[in-house]
Length: 304
Image 1 (cartoon, rainbow, N blue to C red):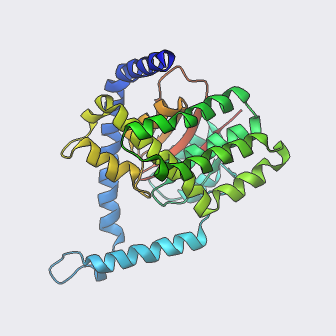
Image 2 (cartoon, rainbow, N blue to C red):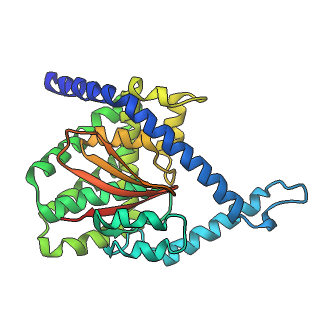
Image 3 (tube, rainbow, N blue to C red):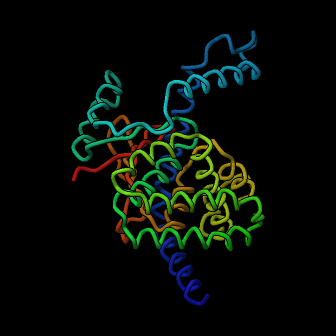
């Protein structure tokens, strides 16, 4: 217990040292996200969803969103096959981002596209963790990750989550992690495809991480609450972290990085440049790379 407390104190110290830099990153990304969401809403919602006074007809909007969601589920896998990075040229053809794509293709060889359902960052992060365990059979990483998951029971219970609620999600996560580690390399990709494109199974993994990170945020409230305005911190956690299909912003990413001790590199695509953000800025041997465009993340694979 003394060692655990010491490790936690060290983690807290590292987070404090990075808070100023992270706050600037958060503000920049959130401003970009808010502006793009406004533009998207302005340009994509049809006139039929406004009444004669120009006000939104919410029942029609909900129906429209449900229809879009059903269409996406029919046509888009949760996680795509590995694709050549040059496919980005086709996706962004004639867009304002086109001049930035070469900056991505210079650094990365492949991409996996993730369904746009509000869980994209969580899905990116968990998939890459499991892929690393399955394909590289890194025993130290496996033991470290398994230990983190096993210790989640204490932190969730300390922060008001009944274990009977968390246990099924926890068990699904740790069982599948072990299966990935023990499966022969030749069968790993098939295993990952089946697991992560099964909505029920993959969502169990996401719910576990959301509950764990919600508890981690509450446990370390003093380090994160300054980023939240207007509403109580616990209310924000319940609304934005626990709720499935809510997008993952920079505060959640900071918490995920610190809870799992796995780094994240975000290639932030905007109209003028490719901004690279690294969490933490140093100290991690393993980093998960993701491409961020307004409101969405996909997995990137660096050139070797």
